Image 1 (cartoon, chains in turn orange, blue):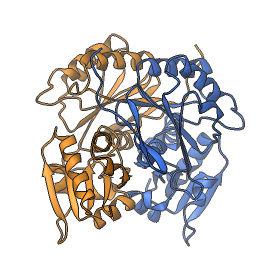
Image 2 (cartoon, chains in turn red, cyan):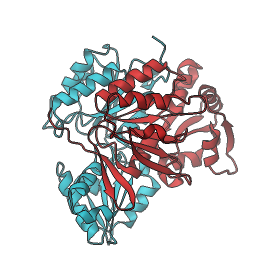
Image 3 (cartoon, rainbow over the protein chains, first blue to last red):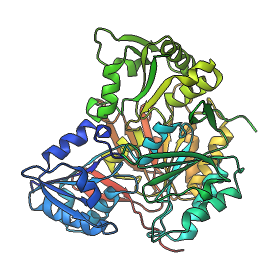
Image 4 (cartoon, rainbow over the protein chains, first blue to last red):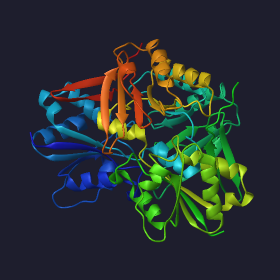
Amino acid sequence: MTGSLAIIGLGPGDASLLTESARRALDAAEELVGYYPYVARVPERPGLNRHASDNRVEVDRAREALRLAAAGRRVAVVSGGDPGVFAMAAAVFEAVEHGEPGWRDLTITVEPGITAMLAAAARLGAPLGADFCALSLSDNLKPWPVVTARLDAVLRADLVVALYNPISVARPWQLGAAFQLAAGIRPPETPVMFARAISRPDEAIRVTTLAEAPQVPADMATLVILGASTTRLIPRAGRVPFVYTSRKVEAA
Amino acid sequence: MTGSLAIIGLGPGDASLLTESARRALDAAEELVGYYPYVARVPERPGLNRHASDNRVEVDRAREALRLAAAGRRVAVVSGGDPGVFAMAAAVFEAVEHGEPGWRDLTITVEPGITAMLAAAARLGAPLGADFCALSLSDNLKPWPVVTARLDAVLRADLVVALYNPISVARPWQLGAAFQLAAGIRPPETPVMFARAISRPDEAIRVTTLAEAPQVPADMATLVILGASTTRLIPRAGRVPFVYTSRKVEAA
């Protein structure tokens, strides 16, 4: 088989946040596969066939991409952010594991990208400056008690927590439940950051506290960061404060 | 003050893994500040003054950069990977918080980069495909019992664990202790990945098990990933297996 499949991270939105390697992989593609807003980010050009699909069909989309590659095409599967973080790479490898034996011999590469928490952190200062984790609040693929058990564990361990997929039309109450759980473990003045659509025209940043967080609107394009005990604000006149998490933890 | 300070992520090594935005920020700099191997990655050019320093002097280096910016210079502080992940951004904001009041009014920006765990994950497949965390094994700035308490918590919560700063000449035993702790919680066949110097000429990848991991050599340039219960290998003839973590968690 001479086809290939590149799983490409488009970063948070603005084209300047792509890596040069990701850009080259896009330029080499003959077939472009992805969730439609990500496919829409890649400019049309002759010789590039576009296959945009709806959300929540990740494994079907992955199989389509693998079939095209197995037929000898140079295929690019695009994700927002980094493809390995709550995005398409895991779906592609799941499809490889359970699919045609020959798919394992395909040249499959992953082009990393700037995932939402890194883009958000960069705008805020350095909120991920110490130990941190990335949790998805979606209970589409894991039971909600697993989500809450993990959240409880990392909050008690005093990690900074980046919450992906905080809310959607189909999952309207999970973020509120997460804040309620956090409020039982961390003090009300704990910094909480809402970072929406970083680097896109509708970018919005909000720095608040755990006490106020339930009143702040969020949507599918929002990443939420819960601070740890060492997360600090640096106030600035007339501007959003810098936020950073100190690397130092004092002995108890 | 007209100076500015950009804290720039250089990615894992190869220049093609820089973002275009980071490249532009480097091109605009007049003063280049950083740990010497990172400064060495940026080509010399007229008009760019270089300030390379040793490791473990992060806050001194940050203060030097802030003083240059306050004097009106366009300063770039460079880090490997992403500057917000166990790197220079937290040190800079710590220096801002405790430094000259005027430093808060400087234009300080952070250019995100591909951090080691994303680069390693991309080479392996999608080992960070579900919930995961990033922990530093260094006990320079936090007591070792804090490190082990966090590691214990995230292992029991079944997160994938990326271990930064796993080992150094000054900290030779911490990685072995971490494997021992993990072996008390996760089964011996748990996948463990060693990713060294990704995208650099001396890149090396090793996929092994928790049982075998203590025998695998590691150094300061190595990132270690401990798999979760849903981390799976896809064997391939004559090649390193693909590794991915399934997004699905079954109900207990």
